[in-house]
Every structure is written in C-alpha cells, then in structure tokens.
Image (tube, rainbow, N blue to C red; front, side, top):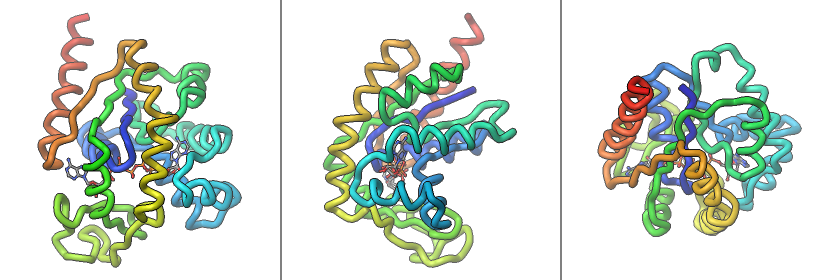
Length: 218
Ligand code: AP5
C-alpha cells in the first residue's frame, strides 16, 4: 500500500506517518527528514536545501525529486511506503504519476492555522534519532531528554515564529492545490486533526481500514 500524508506544516503528518509505518510495517519517507540529514552531513544537496528551508520556502522540485527517487529505489520500498511531505507542488505530484508510482490513498490532515502555530511552538525534536515530541501533547517521559536515545532535545531551526508564518504561506500557495488534484483522482480522504494525538490516530486508522474494506469488496 502506498500512502501520502498531506497537510500544513505542523498538522501532524510526521506523527501519524510514524504510527502507520510501524503498524503496517512499511517505511515512512519524509523529504523534510531527508533534507535535514543532508544538511547535517553538509552534502551539496543539504547546502542547497538549507537556504530554502531556513526561509520557509520549498526546495526546488528538481532537487526534491532526486532525493526522493534515490530513497524510493531502496529495497524496503518494494512492499509499499508512506510519503510524508511529498509531493508539495503539482509538478511533484505529476512526477510521481509520470514515473508510474501508484498512490492508493492520500490522507490530508486538516488543522487550522492558529492551532498549527501552537503545535509548532511546542515541538521539540531529537537531533540524533529524529524523534519528535510536544511539550504538552506528546512530552518525552524524560523531560528535555529524548526518551528513545537520551540526547538533549532541541527546537528545529525552521520552527522559529517568523519562519513558521512563511511556511504556512508557502503551504497555502503551493501545496494546498494538491487537495483538489487528489480529490479529482478519487484517492483523497480528510482527517480533522484532533486535540490529542491518539484521537487523530484513531481517525487515521479508520480511513485506512475503510480503504482496505472497500478494495476487498471491489
Ligand atoms: P518537513 O519536515 O516535511 O516539515 P513540514 O511539512 O513543515 O512538517 P512538519 O515536520 O513541521 O510537521 P508535521 O505535519 O510532520 O507535524 P508533526 O507530526 O511533527 O519539511 C521541512 C522543510 O523541508 C520544508 O519547509 C521545505 O523547505 C523542505 N521540504 C520538505 N519536503 C519538500 C518537498 N516535497 N518539496 C520541497 N521542499 C520540501 O507535529 C507537529 C507538532 O504537533 C509536534 O510537536 C507533535 O507532537 C504535535 N502534534 C501532532 N499531532 C498532534 C495532535 N493531534 N494534537 C496535538 N499535538 C499534536
């Protein structure tokens, strides 16, 4: 099963994608995480991506498609995968189609902008293993230390308030049109992001179960 998670920055795509990845035993591919790894490793791609990420813009399609292509070629993607944060523009979605990548289900997580700002301002991430927390909604049981690998948690560079506004603007301008793109293809389902992570997870799994039930009948 190939699934895309769509949604504004901070809507909870990564949180849900990780859950689903664990339950369905398929890899979760986050282009944002791939770029952050490239930035940390100071590769050419990372250095180019950083200037766009720091301003809340999108990394150009050519660079993004390349990093995704390399990841999708790995053997763990053979039995399905989750795309978290790709595509983010209509040309990126068209690239998937032209490459023959079949998308079974697109889950759009909807959260209004004021909630997004609250969520992003409380996010803390682990620079070592990439685990993501929220100081209120999903705290680490070890406070400011990662519950998985014991590193000190940090605030992401692009989670600073001035960058968050710009990321939201970019989302509304360039990524939101994908909702109609996938609605027209008949693969889009919307999940309203809830106050609690577990409640959103419940709705997300319902959407996946309904999809599986429907495809069995057909
Ligand atoms: P990326 O890392 O993908 O960032 P994003 O889309 O802005 O998404 P986030 O990671 O900020 O949020 P999320 O929706 O995953 O939310 P999360 O689950 O963490 O991309 C970073 C940058 O890379 C982009 O800005 C761009 O420059 C570049 N890039 C990446 N892909 C690209 C592409 N395809 N094309 C071009 N450029 C690209 O949740 C957020 C917080 O809320 C967490 O603290 C979480 O604990 C909490 N939370 C989650 N769910 C709930 C809930 N239900 N209730 C309460 N709190 C919750």
